[in-house]
Length: 397
Image 1: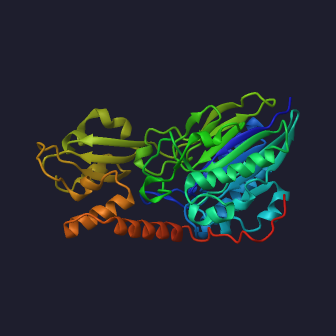
Image 2: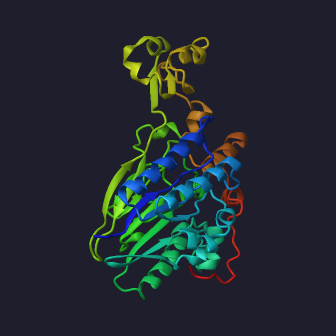
C-alpha cells in the first residue's frame, strides 16, 4: 500500500546560539537525523513550517548548512516543502523558488500564492499541500484584502485555500502556517508576533483540513487531533528544559479518514537543567550528580551574594551558562526590583510603564498609540526583506 507520509518540522533557526554556545554542529546533526528518518520511514514529504533561519540576513555558514541539509533530504528521497517564518527574509529565502520546484524543493514566501498548492499523488488520489508563509498584517493585509490583524490575514489566506479546494473534490488537504494559535503553549525563546500580545489567532480558523502543520511555538504539542506544532528541534532557552524535541510523522489515509500521527524524537546535544539552592548545597549535594554535565541554569538563594559564585560552581558544573541570584530573605513589602516588576510583561506594557516611572503619570491614549506604532515599525524593520512585490504575475508550480 502506498500512502503519503509527511515529516512535519519547523523552527530550525539555523545560525542561532544557546547562551553563546554555537549550535551549528548540532543543527548539522539534526539534518543527518532527518535524512535517516526519511530513509527509514519512507517519508514522501518533509514539511517545514517557517523560521528556517534565525535572522533575516543569515550568516554564511548557516546558508551553507541549509544548502547541504536540503540536498541530503532530497537525496534521501523526500520532496521538501518549506515556507518563511517571522525570522526569515522572504525575499532571500524565496530566491529561485520558481526553478527549485522541479528538483523536489518547494519554497513558498508569497502571501498571494496561498491558494496555489503543491500536489502529490498516492493510491487514494491527490494530496494538496498549502504552505502559508508568515503573514505580517502590515504587509499582507492589502494584497489579501483583509483586516490588518493576524486573524484577518490568516483567515483571508485560508479562504484562498478553501476556494482552491472547492474545485478539487475529494482531495486531502495539508496546510502549514507560522502563527501563534490560541491554546498553544509558548516559551521564552519565541519572538513576539504582535505588540501587546495581539498576535494570537483562533484555532477554529483551521477546521476541516486533513492535517495542519504549525510553526512558531518551540514546544512540540497537539492543539487538536489534526492541528499540531512540531516545535523547534533544539532548545533555545532554559524554559524549554521540559520539552521533548522532535517532529511529527504523519501518515495520510483515504479521504475522510483521520491522519495517523506519531512522534519522532530528535537527538539532544546536551540535556538542560535548572537548579536552585544555596551555594554550599549545590557544590556538595549528591542530588545534583546527574546534572553535572548538563547545560545548566542555576538560581542561588543565599541570603547574601557568595564570593566568586560562577567560578566555584563551574568546577562542578563546567557547562553552567546562566547564573541568577534570588536571595531567600523574608518578604519585604514594596515594589521590588525593576526586573521583578517587568517580568512577564510585553514590550508595549514595559514602554508605557517606563514612561509612567520616569515622569510620574501614565501614558495617554495618544502616547500609547504612538509607542505601539513605533514598536510595530521596529518589528517590521527587523523582518528585513519580508515585503514582496505582489503585483507581478506568478507562474504555477
